[in-house]
Image (tube, rainbow, N blue to C red; front, side):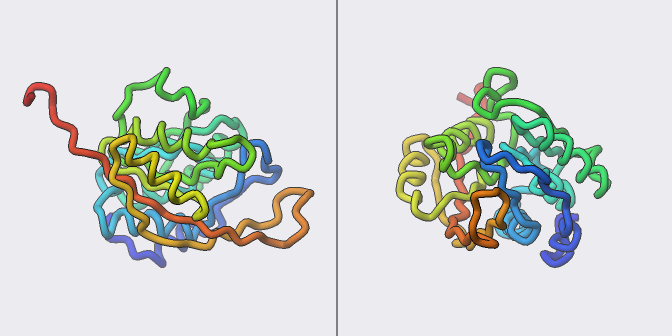
Length: 219
């Protein structure tokens, strides 16, 4: 599974079910199957951050990133979302692709994950967080939580206009951040106030590498 070709992964994630009635307050824009496949394939092929790893997605939405990670051979995947309809959608999509046995989808507030589970519980976190257009700095709240949960790396999408702010926070939190791709995120018209068929948003895919964790008994 770890050697799955990009086109094969894109095909496996194609036509994944998305929100029928997205919630604007949660910035529910589905990550396209093509972008999800590219992120995951790069994380595995270039950095070996998926196969055999424990992977989390904060704000999992339709579950596409968790499902794709499972198809690439992740040992275990967990998706977290505050919206019950998103969790149901993720479960349905994972079942349709026969990976539900490797994935858990958990209903919770991402901001409070650290109150209910052990930190550093995952090797890798891969996410498409809210960009912060509805809730100020929601993207940074998600990033901070992701860095507290991962032991090796975090992959996250951020609006390009926020690059300096995001990289500055990563440095403050001790992560080595690198923009590994510049993407055009095509947001289809999902809400009544959208006047165009789609909106093109310039985004960065950033990899945040975490320092090696030294076992306590080795100190």
